[in-house]
Length: 402
Image (cartoon, rainbow, N blue to C red):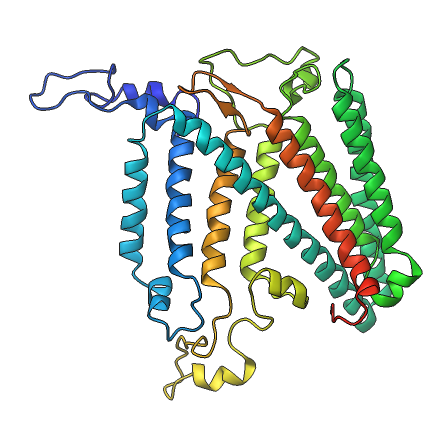
């Protein structure tokens, strides 16, 4: 619905859009306001519906401990009625009048997206540790030279991409006289990435966490540079925020005029969606061996059926059937699951709209500094989280961080 020209195409449908093609069939007249169901308005309203839907179920599923709870059947069934509720909320959202809703929901999106970015960072830190530990175990069990070469290759690749990004940032995003913030952002994050890389290989840290290494630090550094770039692309000052198209064509970056459609499929939006899909998929299939992450993400260490439950899952006729393995305790928090998807809906909304702030009637979509500070502060929190995973075993030596 945000593709350019969609409104013009809908208006060609006879008897559909107000102001569109009309027909002379009695009883059929143009009643649909196509200005509302396309563009950024549709993104705000559909994501509002999804966020409300998941927040509602997040409230309903609070403190569901096992499948014996009657509410667990709602989580695992009643799909027709749940889809019906979602469709109903979505249809109702399109009747919300413009005005205050636009401004208020934008700030809801900013706050929710910030929290979801933090969840993404936690998952990324967990993924980096799991990745490194898995390859180290493979190196001990198999061809060590091959696995260590792979670890070294990816580490060098990540640092090369991160360093190249820093150079490009200084060349293209700090040229204006008012780009002091960008210089500070790039310099600080470069220094922070160097710090975490040094800490990751300190003898004390290596002794407390033998699996700690530069692979994790390089991946976190690369992601930090992406977030830094994403933050700078939301700077309203076009002299400090050139579009990729303007860089390729060596032309000034134009500012969207009021009423002009803003293209959403820019590079940082696409990369943001790819990272979102990766983190959502990883959160769904992950089986972390980090007890602290499991506790934070409200999941159990051993998810799914245990190996000794194989016989229970296979009937006498040899046919395997689904077995309820949550009679004693659920393997993940139903409430936190829906709350995460509520935040994900807000993150999708902000990503598809480039974190632009709409005015009261959507006549202008402009970049805003709040989006810049939300993203750049999230990068600092992500670096702090990773640094804490390195030094926590040293500071809290009486705690188990395995």
